[in-house]
Amino acid sequence: MNEANPQRKIEYAELIDRIKAAFSDMVVLVILMYAATTVLSSFEYVPIEARIAAFVGIFFIYEPLFISAFGGTIGHYVNGLRVKRSKDYSKNVIFPWAIVRYAAKIFLGIISLFTISSNFEGKAMHDMIVNSVVIKK
Image (cartoon, rainbow, N blue to C red):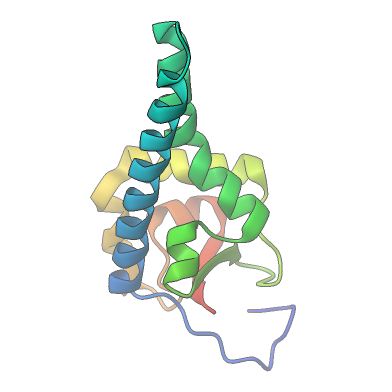
């Protein structure tokens, strides 16, 4: 139940909405990695460890940071979606839980999506783990 505003009709994200958001985020990640490569190539010498750290940082921090700070990634925003706490749709998922959610999403992969159509709120397994929900804005 949405304790923040119980009278507002909530629309939950469907599988196709989430796939579109994921595809949009892949494009954003490629652009960010290209930008990082461009910036790093402007320096005379950059240790390989720094390049690896930049790419790993972009890949692993992008989604949890945006979900906790803004309620969704760029892909979510472009597709009219938000990731919120199940108990209060006005609140974003906190950063540590966003990290757990993303780790579960990576670990479970496509298997996580099988549960979306089997429950009322359209929750994937990674949403169930951290008690989050993806809604249409």
